Length: 271
Image (cartoon, rainbow, N blue to C red; front, side, top):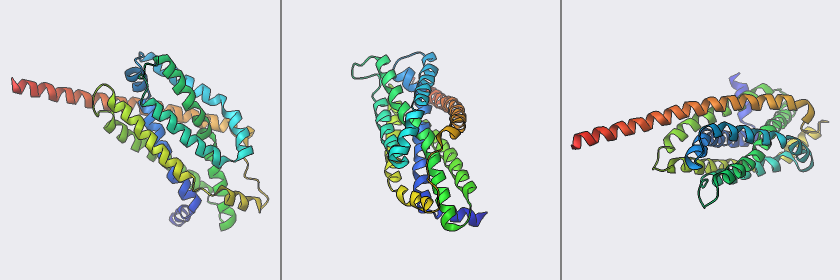
Protein backbone atom coordinates (compact mmCIF):
# COMPACT_ATOMS: atom_id res chain seq x y z
CA UNK A 1 0.00 0.00 0.00
CA UNK A 2 2.82 2.39 0.89
CA UNK A 3 4.55 1.72 -2.42
CA UNK A 4 1.32 2.25 -4.34
CA UNK A 5 0.70 5.54 -2.55
CA UNK A 6 4.26 6.66 -3.27
CA UNK A 7 3.84 5.91 -6.97
CA UNK A 8 0.55 7.78 -7.00
CA UNK A 9 2.14 10.96 -5.68
CA UNK A 10 5.01 10.69 -8.17
CA UNK A 11 2.55 11.43 -10.96
CA UNK A 12 3.35 15.06 -11.86
CA UNK A 13 -0.11 15.89 -13.14
CA UNK A 14 -1.58 14.52 -9.93
CA UNK A 15 0.85 16.63 -7.90
CA UNK A 16 -0.46 19.70 -9.71
CA UNK A 17 -4.06 18.61 -9.22
CA UNK A 18 -3.76 17.83 -5.51
CA UNK A 19 -1.85 21.04 -4.77
CA UNK A 20 -4.51 23.20 -6.39
CA UNK A 21 -7.29 21.09 -4.87
CA UNK A 22 -6.11 21.59 -1.28
CA UNK A 23 -5.97 25.36 -1.80
CA UNK A 24 -9.42 25.27 -3.39
CA UNK A 25 -10.92 23.50 -0.39
CA UNK A 26 -9.27 25.90 2.05
CA UNK A 27 -10.56 28.94 0.14
CA UNK A 28 -14.05 27.51 -0.35
CA UNK A 29 -14.41 26.46 3.28
CA UNK A 30 -13.20 29.83 4.55
CA UNK A 31 -15.80 31.50 2.32
CA UNK A 32 -18.65 29.20 3.28
CA UNK A 33 -17.77 29.34 6.96
CA UNK A 34 -17.74 33.12 6.81
CA UNK A 35 -20.99 33.33 4.89
CA UNK A 36 -23.24 33.80 7.96
CA UNK A 37 -21.02 36.69 9.07
CA UNK A 38 -20.85 38.24 5.60
CA UNK A 39 -24.65 38.20 5.45
CA UNK A 40 -25.35 39.43 8.99
CA UNK A 41 -22.37 41.57 9.98
CA UNK A 42 -21.26 43.02 6.64
CA UNK A 43 -24.59 43.22 4.80
CA UNK A 44 -26.74 43.83 7.86
CA UNK A 45 -29.36 41.11 7.31
CA UNK A 46 -30.87 39.03 10.11
CA UNK A 47 -29.61 35.48 10.66
CA UNK A 48 -32.59 33.96 8.85
CA UNK A 49 -31.33 35.35 5.55
CA UNK A 50 -28.16 33.26 5.75
CA UNK A 51 -29.86 29.99 4.83
CA UNK A 52 -31.83 31.72 2.06
CA UNK A 53 -28.60 33.10 0.59
CA UNK A 54 -26.87 29.73 0.81
CA UNK A 55 -29.78 27.75 -0.68
CA UNK A 56 -30.23 30.32 -3.44
CA UNK A 57 -26.56 30.13 -4.36
CA UNK A 58 -26.71 26.32 -4.43
CA UNK A 59 -29.83 26.25 -6.63
CA UNK A 60 -28.22 28.71 -9.04
CA UNK A 61 -25.15 26.49 -9.11
CA UNK A 62 -27.25 23.46 -10.07
CA UNK A 63 -28.77 25.47 -12.93
CA UNK A 64 -25.30 25.87 -14.44
CA UNK A 65 -24.53 22.13 -14.41
CA UNK A 66 -25.88 21.45 -17.90
CA UNK A 67 -24.01 24.36 -19.57
CA UNK A 68 -20.82 23.29 -17.78
CA UNK A 69 -21.10 19.77 -19.18
CA UNK A 70 -21.61 21.11 -22.69
CA UNK A 71 -18.72 23.58 -22.48
CA UNK A 72 -16.40 20.95 -21.02
CA UNK A 73 -16.80 18.86 -24.16
CA UNK A 74 -16.25 21.84 -26.44
CA UNK A 75 -13.32 23.69 -24.88
CA UNK A 76 -11.86 21.16 -22.46
CA UNK A 77 -11.93 20.71 -18.71
CA UNK A 78 -8.65 22.49 -17.93
CA UNK A 79 -9.76 25.84 -19.32
CA UNK A 80 -13.06 25.71 -17.46
CA UNK A 81 -11.50 24.72 -14.15
CA UNK A 82 -8.87 27.46 -14.42
CA UNK A 83 -11.62 29.94 -15.30
CA UNK A 84 -13.59 28.82 -12.23
CA UNK A 85 -10.62 29.38 -9.94
CA UNK A 86 -10.10 32.92 -11.16
CA UNK A 87 -13.84 33.68 -11.23
CA UNK A 88 -14.08 32.51 -7.64
CA UNK A 89 -11.32 35.01 -6.85
CA UNK A 90 -13.60 37.74 -8.18
CA UNK A 91 -16.48 36.53 -6.00
CA UNK A 92 -14.30 36.29 -2.89
CA UNK A 93 -12.72 39.69 -3.50
CA UNK A 94 -16.12 41.32 -4.01
CA UNK A 95 -17.30 39.77 -0.75
CA UNK A 96 -14.59 41.67 1.11
CA UNK A 97 -16.33 44.93 0.11
CA UNK A 98 -19.92 43.78 0.64
CA UNK A 99 -22.13 46.29 2.42
CA UNK A 100 -19.99 49.25 1.31
CA UNK A 101 -19.71 51.66 -1.65
CA UNK A 102 -23.29 52.85 -1.10
CA UNK A 103 -24.72 49.76 -2.81
CA UNK A 104 -27.88 48.31 -1.19
CA UNK A 105 -27.31 45.11 0.77
CA UNK A 106 -29.87 43.19 -1.29
CA UNK A 107 -27.96 44.04 -4.46
CA UNK A 108 -24.76 42.80 -2.84
CA UNK A 109 -26.46 39.56 -1.85
CA UNK A 110 -27.81 38.86 -5.33
CA UNK A 111 -24.56 39.77 -7.09
CA UNK A 112 -22.44 37.62 -4.79
CA UNK A 113 -24.83 34.67 -5.07
CA UNK A 114 -24.65 34.79 -8.87
CA UNK A 115 -20.88 35.31 -8.96
CA UNK A 116 -20.21 32.39 -6.60
CA UNK A 117 -22.71 29.99 -8.19
CA UNK A 118 -20.90 29.84 -11.54
CA UNK A 119 -17.51 28.57 -10.28
CA UNK A 120 -19.33 26.40 -7.73
CA UNK A 121 -21.01 24.56 -10.61
CA UNK A 122 -17.76 24.10 -12.52
CA UNK A 123 -15.73 22.98 -9.53
CA UNK A 124 -18.56 20.78 -8.34
CA UNK A 125 -18.25 18.61 -11.47
CA UNK A 126 -14.99 18.93 -13.35
CA UNK A 127 -12.23 18.29 -10.78
CA UNK A 128 -13.53 14.76 -10.30
CA UNK A 129 -13.53 14.29 -14.08
CA UNK A 130 -9.98 15.66 -14.32
CA UNK A 131 -8.91 13.22 -11.63
CA UNK A 132 -10.54 10.37 -13.55
CA UNK A 133 -8.50 11.33 -16.62
CA UNK A 134 -5.28 11.42 -14.60
CA UNK A 135 -6.02 8.03 -13.03
CA UNK A 136 -6.89 6.47 -16.39
CA UNK A 137 -3.75 7.81 -18.09
CA UNK A 138 -1.65 6.61 -15.16
CA UNK A 139 -3.10 3.10 -15.37
CA UNK A 140 -2.19 3.00 -19.07
CA UNK A 141 1.40 4.18 -18.66
CA UNK A 142 2.15 2.14 -15.52
CA UNK A 143 0.10 -0.98 -16.26
CA UNK A 144 -1.25 -0.66 -12.71
CA UNK A 145 -4.71 0.44 -11.68
CA UNK A 146 -4.32 2.86 -8.78
CA UNK A 147 -7.64 4.66 -9.20
CA UNK A 148 -8.58 3.98 -5.59
CA UNK A 149 -5.42 5.70 -4.38
CA UNK A 150 -6.11 8.77 -6.51
CA UNK A 151 -9.64 9.15 -5.21
CA UNK A 152 -8.60 8.46 -1.61
CA UNK A 153 -5.92 11.13 -1.88
CA UNK A 154 -8.49 13.61 -3.18
CA UNK A 155 -10.79 12.85 -0.26
CA UNK A 156 -7.87 13.44 2.09
CA UNK A 157 -7.07 16.76 0.39
CA UNK A 158 -10.67 17.85 0.91
CA UNK A 159 -10.62 16.98 4.61
CA UNK A 160 -7.20 18.59 5.05
CA UNK A 161 -8.32 21.76 3.30
CA UNK A 162 -11.45 22.00 5.43
CA UNK A 163 -9.49 21.48 8.65
CA UNK A 164 -6.90 24.11 7.76
CA UNK A 165 -9.69 26.50 6.78
CA UNK A 166 -11.19 26.25 10.26
CA UNK A 167 -7.88 27.27 11.81
CA UNK A 168 -7.39 30.12 9.34
CA UNK A 169 -10.92 31.47 9.70
CA UNK A 170 -11.02 31.46 13.48
CA UNK A 171 -7.61 33.16 13.57
CA UNK A 172 -8.29 35.87 11.00
CA UNK A 173 -11.94 36.62 11.83
CA UNK A 174 -11.05 38.24 15.18
CA UNK A 175 -8.63 40.76 13.68
CA UNK A 176 -9.71 44.36 14.12
CA UNK A 177 -13.23 45.66 14.73
CA UNK A 178 -16.41 46.50 12.81
CA UNK A 179 -16.20 43.39 10.64
CA UNK A 180 -12.63 43.95 9.47
CA UNK A 181 -11.67 40.38 10.35
CA UNK A 182 -14.50 38.96 8.25
CA UNK A 183 -13.46 41.07 5.28
CA UNK A 184 -9.90 39.83 5.82
CA UNK A 185 -11.08 36.21 5.60
CA UNK A 186 -12.53 36.94 2.17
CA UNK A 187 -9.20 38.40 1.06
CA UNK A 188 -7.38 35.33 2.37
CA UNK A 189 -9.77 33.12 0.38
CA UNK A 190 -9.07 35.25 -2.70
CA UNK A 191 -5.30 34.85 -2.41
CA UNK A 192 -5.47 31.10 -1.78
CA UNK A 193 -7.83 30.57 -4.70
CA UNK A 194 -5.59 32.64 -6.97
CA UNK A 195 -2.55 30.54 -6.05
CA UNK A 196 -4.57 27.36 -6.58
CA UNK A 197 -5.60 28.52 -10.05
CA UNK A 198 -2.04 29.39 -11.01
CA UNK A 199 -0.87 25.96 -9.87
CA UNK A 200 -3.61 24.25 -11.88
CA UNK A 201 -2.39 25.96 -15.06
CA UNK A 202 0.59 23.57 -14.93
CA UNK A 203 -1.75 20.60 -15.51
CA UNK A 204 -0.95 19.05 -18.92
CA UNK A 205 -4.39 18.09 -20.11
CA UNK A 206 -3.37 17.48 -23.74
CA UNK A 207 -0.72 14.97 -22.70
CA UNK A 208 -3.15 13.13 -20.40
CA UNK A 209 -5.89 12.96 -23.02
CA UNK A 210 -3.31 11.95 -25.63
CA UNK A 211 -2.34 8.92 -23.57
CA UNK A 212 -5.99 7.99 -23.10
CA UNK A 213 -6.79 8.54 -26.77
CA UNK A 214 -3.89 6.38 -27.91
CA UNK A 215 -5.53 3.44 -26.13
CA UNK A 216 -9.02 3.95 -27.47
CA UNK A 217 -10.42 6.18 -24.71
CA UNK A 218 -11.82 9.67 -25.15
CA UNK A 219 -11.37 11.19 -21.69
CA UNK A 220 -14.75 12.83 -21.99
CA UNK A 221 -16.99 13.68 -19.07
CA UNK A 222 -19.82 11.20 -18.72
CA UNK A 223 -22.45 13.79 -17.94
CA UNK A 224 -25.79 12.03 -17.84
CA UNK A 225 -24.68 8.93 -15.97
CA UNK A 226 -22.63 10.91 -13.52
CA UNK A 227 -25.12 13.64 -12.64
CA UNK A 228 -26.80 11.82 -9.77
CA UNK A 229 -23.46 10.97 -8.21
CA UNK A 230 -22.28 14.56 -8.57
CA UNK A 231 -25.44 15.93 -6.98
CA UNK A 232 -25.18 13.47 -4.09
CA UNK A 233 -21.54 14.44 -3.61
CA UNK A 234 -22.41 18.13 -3.55
CA UNK A 235 -25.27 17.52 -1.12
CA UNK A 236 -22.84 15.73 1.19
CA UNK A 237 -20.36 18.59 0.89
CA UNK A 238 -23.13 21.10 1.69
CA UNK A 239 -24.04 19.18 4.84
CA UNK A 240 -20.38 19.06 5.88
CA UNK A 241 -19.96 22.78 5.25
CA UNK A 242 -23.05 23.56 7.34
CA UNK A 243 -21.58 21.60 10.25
CA UNK A 244 -18.24 23.36 9.74
CA UNK A 245 -19.92 26.77 9.80
CA UNK A 246 -21.61 25.96 13.10
CA UNK A 247 -18.35 24.73 14.62
CA UNK A 248 -16.38 27.75 13.50
CA UNK A 249 -19.13 30.05 14.70
CA UNK A 250 -18.96 28.63 18.20
CA UNK A 251 -15.17 29.00 18.25
CA UNK A 252 -15.28 32.63 17.08
CA UNK A 253 -17.99 33.50 19.59
CA UNK A 254 -16.07 31.81 22.41
CA UNK A 255 -12.88 33.66 21.50
CA UNK A 256 -14.76 36.95 21.31
CA UNK A 257 -16.31 36.32 24.73
CA UNK A 258 -12.89 35.53 26.16
CA UNK A 259 -11.53 38.81 24.83
CA UNK A 260 -14.50 40.66 26.34
CA UNK A 261 -13.95 38.99 29.72
CA UNK A 262 -10.27 39.92 29.68
CA UNK A 263 -11.20 43.49 28.87
CA UNK A 264 -13.66 43.62 31.76
CA UNK A 265 -11.07 42.22 34.16
CA UNK A 266 -8.52 44.78 33.01
CA UNK A 267 -11.07 47.54 33.62
CA UNK A 268 -11.77 46.33 37.15
CA UNK A 269 -8.06 46.17 37.95
CA UNK A 270 -7.58 49.70 36.67
CA UNK A 271 -10.36 50.91 38.95
